[in-house]
Length: 410
Image (cartoon, rainbow, N blue to C red; front, side):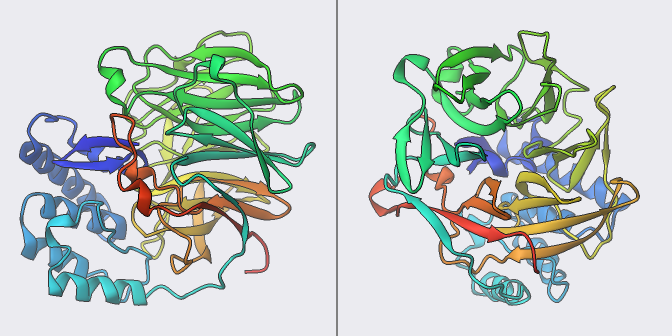
């Protein structure tokens, strides 16, 4: 999955900060300048917000302003925020700069190393390019979607088999969610980041019967640009994020299509999404996490201290009163537990469950909770997928590892 912006191709889960620059998409310099101005305006409201400092540095790099970028990154040293620049993610032009590398090492050294979580199982095909994963506790099966192969596979007892069928005519498969009450599997399917979208854009959520694997329905989102992740309420209401427009879509049980829910662009960088048992809806943003009013669709960014970074989260999950997130934009990849307070309206703190030191982490995306562990797609290689459907440097990729990160005891 790759999208073009600010003169770069970046994975879908890294486009939140690019959304700030959409006012001038045909002129990379003007887009970067517009993005920089937006970030600087936000910094006036939250001057100590580390992730805004990080994004501002990224924009200065895009504009060729090396000194300003390095000064900002240098200011993050010692804050232990887990903000570490990534290769091929906005810092390419200074990547081989000795001073930049020195700063990167210092920022990486700030992050304590956690124990290495075990690999639960692997996908043999390195060209699979998985992005979404879900788990059905009744059948003890994981379901994994392929961006490159446009299909869904099932994993049970380390055995893989195709779940979807070619006649289902899926596009790239992203977010997946199991509805255990009605025994359904839901999956986002989209071509929003592929060349085919220039001729005909496809965005939908498909519904499968978990018992027999039959495709039951296809709920299209005609107004979406690129659906990404989804969640389902106890009453069967579907919510899906549109990362390209920073918006949310919803389908009530009695409806046949996904409709825009809330204002377009109200959720910049919308990606991961999670529902609490009480119906509270949370969506990840470029700079943090928002709680969305399920009546009006209006989001409220959760306040947090400057000692906490929750921006750059891809997968988001509810577990035992906390949120759990997989960060991959602002860090090479880590799993964090996000403690909430004030009845779920404020972030109290963050605990790193798996640091970026894991040897299998390479563009981790999403996960699925099973047996008290978050099973994370550790090396998705999503950034290797090209808009023409090919996989860059495919021969250099390893088998995909699903890493089981314990959610308790840390």
